[in-house]
Image 1 (cartoon, rainbow, N blue to C red):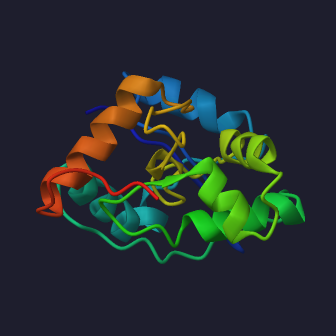
Image 2: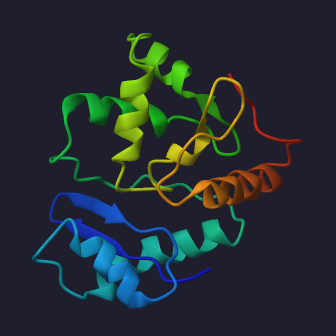
Length: 163
């Protein structure tokens, strides 16, 4: 599908790019978050293999340690709850807000997801509008649909579950 970029720190993963047309584009996107990024492919061999497997349609677990130190407390809560959405299923922005005990915070949930620098690892593509429409996605709506369809076909379900 293209080039993925992965950025980490001593504390864990900082950022991942969705597939890009070139390695230069992936590096450019990662550089937005760190001026001290260096090329070091050996640090992410296992993660790289799991991401490839995921994009090939394998059901893969991403239990990696994350460095969310630059995030607000609310963003961390949204992202941690988003990681609980099962593979092949979806939840609404409203569901997430209610799960956080803040039913009025639907828009804030969407804003927190828009700042997610770890797509796929924090599966914000699994969050859709209450009416079932896709909503936004940093990688574009086409990529969101692709990831949802990929998971739906892998999970042997007739589609996504919306709550």
